Length: 186
Image 1 (cartoon, rainbow, N blue to C red):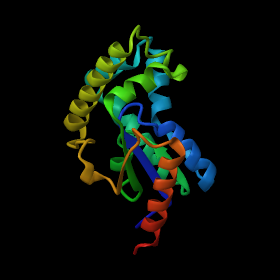
Image 2 (image 1 turned 90 degrees about the vertical axis):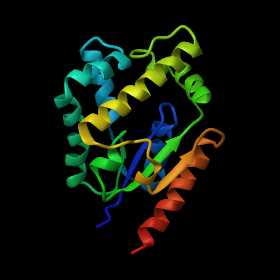
Image 3 (image 1 turned 120 degrees about the vertical axis):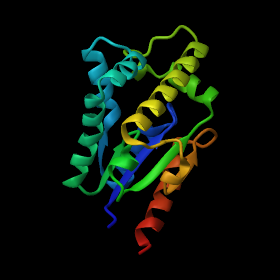
Image 4 (image 1 turned 180 degrees about the vertical axis):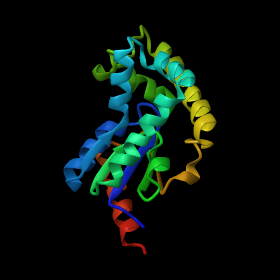
């Protein structure tokens, strides 16, 4: 059974938050963001986001709670956008979107993103890029170990959008149109 829920996963710095904000405005949906919760937990532990990802390897109960929180929230909500790496897995009845981006562009976006400065402190774009590779690999390893899934397997998604060259507005429009088509299918 389909629910009016869009789950958005994707590469680091692929535009998930900004696209989610536009979708919220256009669709009048509520947003649930796992990333904000993860960054809050990292900050509480006094860890940067990559170190916190490493910490989660030894504390799978925290990782599982993070994913369960999105699924539990979606059980009692509709008209919802979930911004979560494993949102597609946690909420299989959702419209599942993956956002891709060229790694070099992603590193530039992340490096200049003021919202990341509290949990990501790098001197150069190259340091940011290397950290993103480390985080990506760490997450993939952790998610496969815990859940037996590969988030980078594009067959998990109803729609894959490459955000590298599109504007945020173009990406949101692509998602909205595909979502409406998905809702109209039986």
